[in-house]
Length: 369
Ligand SMILES: [Zn+2]
Ligand SMILES: [Zn+2]
Image 1: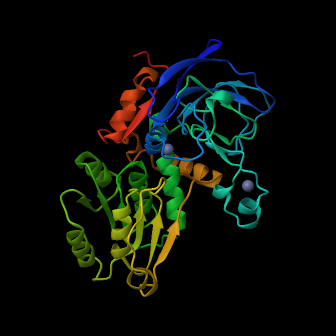
Image 2 (image 1 turned 90 degrees about the vertical axis):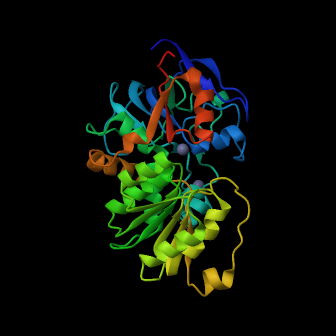
Image 3 (image 1 turned 90 degrees about the horizontal axis):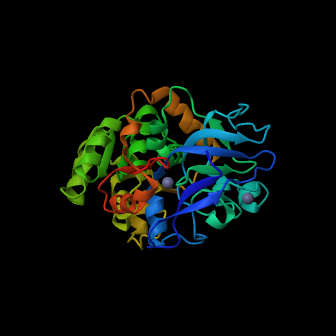
């Protein structure tokens, strides 16, 4: 790798992506430089491009989940999986860094994903600070970043196909306190919803139902483990409620997961959950506007347990790797990543993601197109 590194920069909302050259960074002790093999364009990147996330220090190098090979290590550097890391290792890293461990969110409430000091590669790190995103030929891994070896049997495309959606899904299943035999309904068939379907199935759900669109994502939802899928555009909420009650002794669903980011989806989820059920809300990563709730009928009398799910922790990252190592041969995570784009094609990738023409766009920063 030369001393000049190419990266795609998002200068601000709705700005065309431009390619800039960065100097190869000097590494302090404990830091590493990752040669990027793959990164991704996820729903968050579309939100960033729309300017719908607060506190983003544009210009940024997007791409918060990435995989590659360690190009330089100023060692010793230890992985959070317990490994000693060396140049040439195939690794991935946890995108959240600088979680402080000392603030009230971290130390008192034990909710580290709400730590005000935490930063996220590709989202809350500025390009002015360096190569903190995956839409780049190399990524600077500062001291303290959680790095792990990619298990030999896991391909880069499996890892990035799961990507941030798989980490989120691990957290969702944890928040849901899923029990063997639970019925699970997932609203949304994007990357988060698809991985949630797979994990619910692997974690012992009895029936897994998905609501989503368009048709190719519904076909993939079935391959990920859904027993029953509803096309959002071809069925009414009344039809869905009637069908769900028909397969649950008239009760409704044990665990509903919102991974759609729609105010209407939240209203429907309250109806689909059974009395005493659990409802995990994970898709409202940006403000999708208010929902109408009847607190008496839908929460209080229903004894409903509603749980938010924000971000992920190092344990979710490591357990996502464990799932991939064990199940990548049987769960088609690599199929979520539908097309690979070069740095020069990222405007097109964002437009394709925005229009839902593809399930997930992958980025190969070394491709020459
Ligand atoms: Zn903190
Ligand atoms: Zn993401």
